[in-house]
Length: 123
Image (cartoon, rainbow, N blue to C red; front, side, top):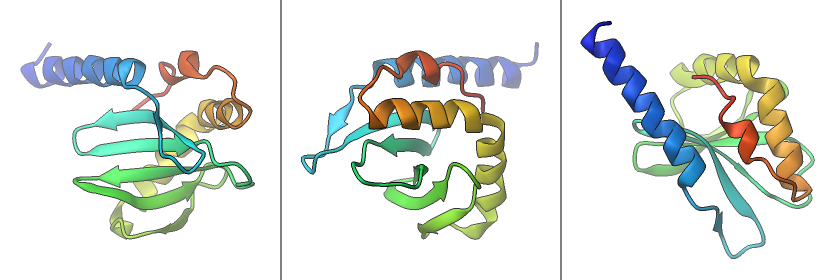
């Protein structure tokens, strides 16, 4: 196994541990934040947002929070400042993980357990 592959595997293990151990934060406005995936400078998150009918994710990139939001169903950008060059990457990731991400969204919106679903998301 190459050193790069070993490092990527180790980084993936760290990211999975982060997902499972990072505390859920309440933002004071009545919603909770769930970290779906964290890799290097990117975080993919879902919020428990009462009244939001469109299932979507939020992307933090670098030091900026909420750089973009994407529809889980279509993979299309809803809004944001993230460079458009990343749109196809996010859309493809959502395509590969749509079923699990929707399960997390649905579970979070009704207050059910979702932690077991996080470990099943792919890079």
